Length: 125
Image (cartoon, rainbow, N blue to C red):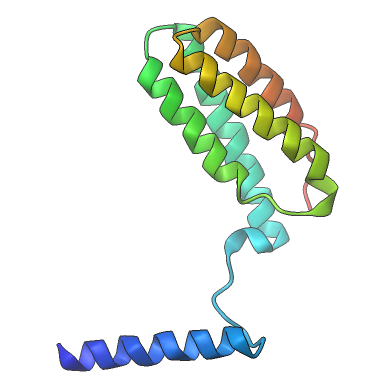
């Protein structure tokens, strides 16, 4: 047990030291073009599923959870070329979530369709 603790402590120190001097550290997937493209694809998938849930009109909690999932993936999208579109996407997702929380699944569905239109405008990196 003590050995595991020592190894983990050493690894944490090495990663921290690398970060302080600008050296390589563990990369977050979305910092690469591949990671951003994957996040865009995941947002599209989550939105498509959320639209389907909203259209069924019976699973309020499932819809809210799916919107939250889309928002998590959205946060992984980086790049100056996405700036304004990301803001519109965020606003649309927040509006859809609010509607879903109030039980307006039809309104949430329409807003999610707008969000899907926005994310479909994102060009792969």
